[in-house]
Length: 256
Picture 1 (cartoon, rainbow, N blue to C red):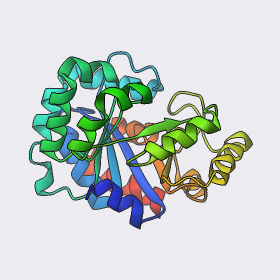
Picture 2 (cartoon, rainbow, N blue to C red):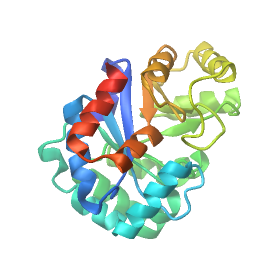
Picture 3 (cartoon, rainbow, N blue to C red):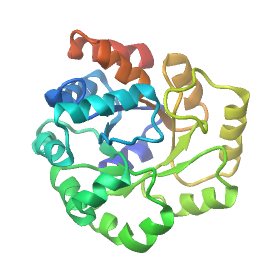
Picture 4 (cartoon, rainbow, N blue to C red):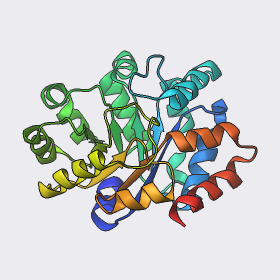
């Protein structure tokens, strides 16, 4: 059984944290993973840095640029995660863009994910149609879930289609803006959440983009299985003087 699916099926009010691999320093990836697990985060999304991150706001863009300058690559990331499952029990997802994955080789990439214990992928620019036609069997054979994104602009028919084919969760992008661009939730977003809930989808839902504090986290949990926090966490990492202590305090400030 996939760790991510087990978690999504059994727990509510989930907190997922996104961070960029190789940031602030190249070898901080495992330190951050360990600290997040100890702090009580439910699962993590490790960002694979890319030189042209179109959907990311300035905070995550900056972290991606720094990580690449530090020497991060997919090969380095897999080396860092090689012994992850000796101590990390929570689900781990990799998130990034399709271009570096294709350059690495999709089958080789999925094999490496399975080997180190990655549970799922979020590739926002991998169209469902391409995934379904070319890669679905590969993902399923390695027990790697692929997460589909929906936005307020996604037609209801497509939301239903993605829901029917989802193996992990639906990533509810809370707005059409880039990551980190908003604070709090507005009525447009709440109407969107209500519309999706009224559809009675089968898949668990996680909300991302614009979730930055305990208030927005608690609010989102009323409409979905949980929330994903990225930019606010990356900003904290950038300013941190002690990663372990500051990560513990950050998670506590969200979950209480």
